[in-house]
Image (cartoon, rainbow, N blue to C red):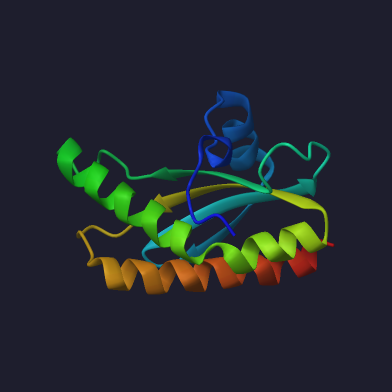
Length: 131
C-alpha cells in the first residue's frame, strides 16, 4: 500500500468539513479529539478516507509550533493507516474525519504515534457499529 498522504486524502472544502462537525460523531482520545462520518464510497477514484488535521491557535500562538504538531500528526497517520484503509476497502465505505489536537504541550512524536494508532483502532471499531 502507498504510504503517502496524498492530495486526494486531504479534506479541503468548507462544506464537507462543516458537515463532519455538524452531523458526524466524535471520539476523545487524548491528545486528540476526532470528528468523523462514514458513508458509502461511490467514487472509486477518490480515496477511502479524507481528513484534516487541526491545531488550534488559542493553544499554540506560534505558527511554527502548530505546523510542527500538525506535521507529526500527519506522519503518524500516514504510517499507521493501512488497517483503516483495508477495513474501508473491504466494506466499500468512505471516511471523512477531522483530528483536533487538544493537549496544551507539544508532545513527542512517539507518543503522538501511539495515540494515533489507538485513535485509528477506535475508528475501525466505530465503523463496525455504524454498519
